[in-house]
Length: 213
Image (cartoon, one colour):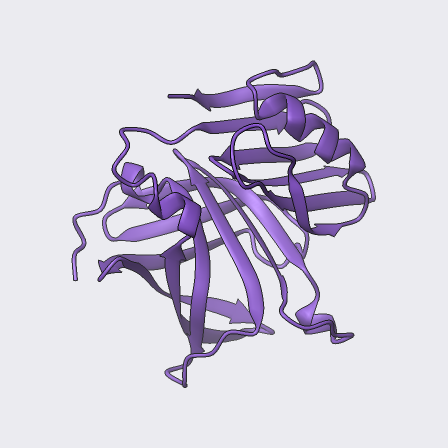
């Protein structure tokens, strides 16, 4: 186990492998992607199987992190559930997997959790490179983030009562983006992603990070 991580080590695309609650057996019932680009992050998750349960609906949030080894604080600047303004956990790298241990308050009850994250297959192929291709943009009206890391992207945008979010993946540079899941209407976000992924930012979005190698 190592805690000699820095923020650059976290930049990339992570998919959750499992979660254990209150010391219970590890399981996975959702598709969960976490994109980290510098100090910016975006997270989107949805059930593996369709469900009508309110607790198993898709969720999405994004913002900035505060990092002090081994503790990370995720500050949710935009959050579909509006239940959490931030969450804090400790991170450790174990055999190539990122172990996240923390606590969350649910219905006024503090619950301990342990999540195991693995780098996506595409991300694994570029670990040895000096830098990831990353773009982050913030909406200039309402609340919004588009976080693009290599061949993955998550976007969220909220204006008034409208909330839209989406997660995409592509097989390589220049190939079409595949929509993995969405909340609301993702068409506007999809159009913006195509521009931002090549480093083009219009007046509706402000570039806050652009790192292309």
